[in-house]
Image 1 (cartoon, rainbow, N blue to C red):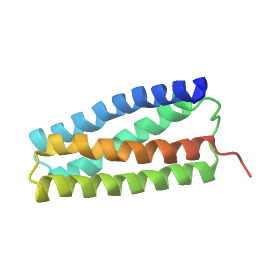
Image 2 (cartoon, rainbow, N blue to C red; image 1 turned 60 degrees about the vertical axis):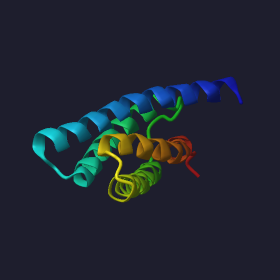
Image 3 (cartoon, one colour; image 1 turned 120 degrees about the vertical axis):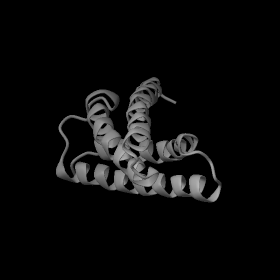
Length: 130
């Protein structure tokens, strides 16, 4: 693996960690303090963290991404919608079917979605205008 790609992955994991704190914290606040159902809270917190994550990915993680085209933004948003779907499926599966506490389930869901996010977001922010 090239040195720059390794550093990119490290930056992605740092930004992802910060985004996870936003996601996880907002999920907890919405459920525990505002009594919002865990699936709605999960969708809201995921969406907020995706917006935050996108900004940091373009500015910090993927060096040379530059200004984004409409095509790149659509791919990024599309991959995020699929990521949201994966997140919601995982949350439902872990919480309702396996009876795992929603905060623990979120960790598992995030681990699964992170792999998808790296692959697709890297494509979205680094593709060339062809």
